[in-house]
Length: 212
Image 1 (cartoon, rainbow, N blue to C red):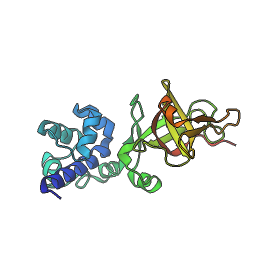
Image 2: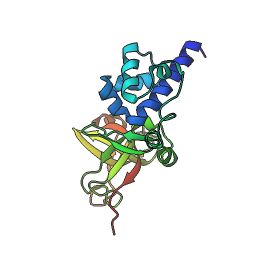
Image 3: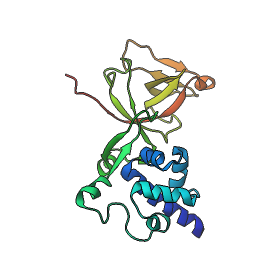
Image 4: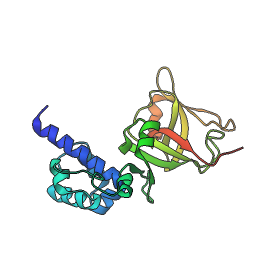
């Protein structure tokens, strides 16, 4: 691997560690860096020095560590309370309408072995997915999933409305869109009609108030 590419990827991983310690969305806003640009940086893209300096400041790490890997990373020389915060990450809302959910990184990596930076929060609306999901239930969506390869719960956007549905790939192409509430009949979408909705990702965790 080219040495320059290796160094940029290592810098991106340090940035990911630092940003996750305060929440990636919050880090982007506080540093004045567009969210998509921050994602590019974390994936090893070339960084502007001014952006590195700003991100180091808002994440509470030294510029020397973030840029070059010299010295201690986030939480390594902090009091116990501060160090424990770095073992948490913030999962942002899909539309970033408010602060996300701060959660233990260790638990999340164990429960959802995915790219944590691709996760986002949504809520289920309506009764179409009962009894699997009630209206208001929280779901975590993996936005890195961009194709329907297996029957699973997915988040969709259709005509400006966010939906949670079970999608089942059909032999020969197309998908069957299924609501778990039997009051709503399944809908078959042909392959040449898949543009009627936008796939937002796969639902990888659900939670809500316990129901009797």
